[in-house]
Image 1 (cartoon, rainbow, N blue to C red):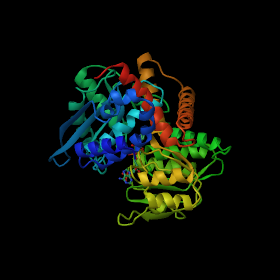
Image 2 (cartoon, rainbow, N blue to C red):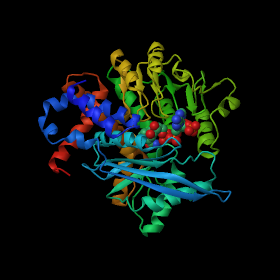
Image 3 (cartoon, rainbow, N blue to C red):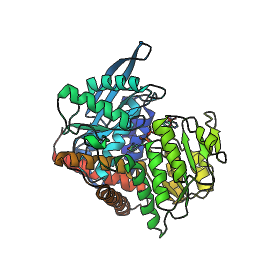
Image 4 (tube, protein in one colour):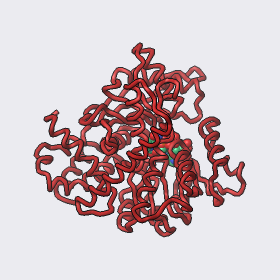
Length: 453
Ligand code: NDP
């Protein structure tokens, strides 16, 4: 670690205590950037890094609502407007009890680089609440989201800040929030993405993150004249990203054998075929049930409950070729990373944001496997959100095929940026360095152009 990075990290930790995920995300990026800072003293002189790690604005607010029993509940809402150098703030909203300022700042920070990599004009932001949609009725979710939007509406706008979904925020929540925004502003504009098809949504947006992560894996494999055909894949999560990751793995001839939620995971040695995937979609999106029910429906599959006291997750300890972490941050630690390598995994494509700890990442890089970090591999979601914004501006919608082709092209371009940037900075095949530097330069140059703001 260079002296410059060391001092910067000491400052980040002192100024942002109790935000370990934010420290982790910053450390990973600034370590990659030290070579850029050496080659470009103008970035250092203009304190670009010191500015980029400080959100342009943090909004934190009270979200009161009334539950089914008539009791008043109070949650906390946030929006981090991280960087608007290349476009309006853009990034999802997460509703999960673990949400706090540090987690949202890490996500907003990652988003800045990810959005830049997509080639579309989008700045970075993230938001959400510690509200837990699990076990809540539709009415409770509506009351909560309406209260949430009653404050958020004054901070967002089609040219200011355009949120989307993330963990716990899907079509239902986006719908309620859009309705409330429209009522408050008396305005039908594209202030959210992930909207329903009948009211300004884009085809392929629900599929985009999962599809994009598999397209990215296919691009990585192609550099070794290989493909997903016949590959055994470990997938975590069973939400939006995991579901469409499995669908695209099937399209490209691979076999997904695992799926999970926060309570445990399923190992289905026979593979998750289209019928089983349809069952998972119904279970998770409509019945809002638990993944353990999969093993009741398909008795040949094995369900293993999560064990918080274990030093690793058994999901990552099966023979496989590829891994698609698609649940949450830090779900692969160094023991899991080593297990993956020992089990023959040669591709890791991150659908989730920062699912691998820094030690785990270093093991993948040292082993020379094809490791696609989240900010590159899962950028397909926000890329199609950008395409949704473009369609809203035109008041016109593209076909499924048109959007999917654009998504494929964007993932290919991101892959090329990672590869060529890594090579230019002397780290051939290192997608982490390629993604971090590739995403940074466009934002940094724009910040230089726009003066000290
Ligand atoms: P969903 O809410 O649809 O699904 C999340 C899945 O991950 C669920 O299966 C959930 O299980 C599981 N999960 C959530 N938190 C934990 C936890 N702490 N421990 C174990 N499992 C957990 O979210 P998405 O699929 O949209 O998001 C998944 C990941 O992908 C996140 O990291 C998100 O930031 C990232 N991402 C999402 C994008 C999108 O377009 N949606 C875009 C880019 C990245 P349970 O139901 O039990 O909570």
